Length: 175
Image 1 (cartoon, one colour):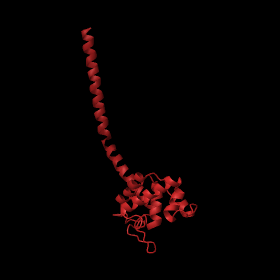
Image 2 (image 1 turned 90 degrees about the horizontal axis):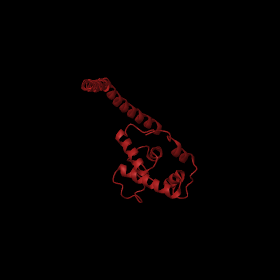
Image 3 (image 1 turned 60 degrees about the horizontal axis):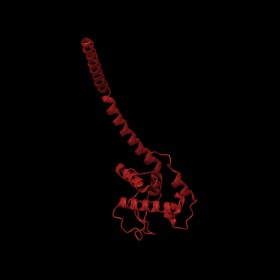
């Protein structure tokens, strides 16, 4: 009986050693794949920026970290990113220094300094604009009505081609 136990222990130990060797060998073969996956993820992200730039006509002067900031602010305010980017494109053509001479509205979101006084930088402009849009959505129950209110006040029509474009353009893009 003791011989059999010694023999079976040896077999179990051998099996464990073989499995460990196989696992180490498997990992050594796949180390290159981990690097490739990282490279592919980076390329995919770069392709994503390219697709985003093309879809929303974002100029090269807007860098990737600014696009990341738009996405982050959109998530924080719970405004769909495609709508945020469409509004920024229509309002300022992605020019953070844009000023409307007739209304005095400023920045990416073209907010009135009369009502939005605490705009310290270009991203606060986006945050305040999207937060206001989200508040209007919650009050009015519709993105189309909220966007109409954002663009023209309470009496603005919510069934215009521009509003339909803002709501629909890019809605299927994954960010």
